[in-house]
Image (cartoon, rainbow, N blue to C red; front, side, top):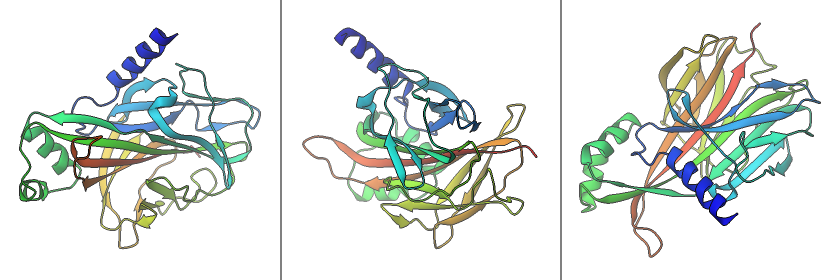
Length: 271
């Protein structure tokens, strides 16, 4: 059994972005974004690029939170070691289901400055070189830690209900229900960091159509952390935002930067 645990953990680590985090998103992908109230609700944990990636198994040591919520009713997701899809719930409620997942911290070491610079520029931190050098940090051999904070919206039965803040360290909150509301004027979201709205932040929107074609657009939050995203019926979406924090090395970690990745997935039903 111990050998099995070590093997599964190693496989999951291999799928996580041990390659410098450069644009390797993490998200929750339900097998179906709309399920009957008596049908199983299943979802995969994915890491990759351009809304495509590998599927991670259920391993409790990889997460600090894994929950299924219907409004104020929040329950822990239970699973078997190595289970894939990681979420498999037979008996669930009806309404707007919100899947919540927060990872434990992972770490990587940058041996090439350009790799870190490309990642930071892509995620909209153009002043990263000045900030890094002002702290007297080396340009190679430094460590970054990172964590993922993911949500997914699923219509169970009638799909009625609303998203809300669930206390993830960073999180998107959907300000409309994609399964019941009129989204002709766009899909409104609000981005939070440590419980406060995150203003003027880059939001990356991955749009996958019915044929599987993915397009990516960039957006920004306003002074209240809000953004309205363009959506179309019959498309699935991944919304992503990254926070880059300065941290001081400790006895437990030599990391000098910490990145927090927020993601939200949902689908707009075909009309």
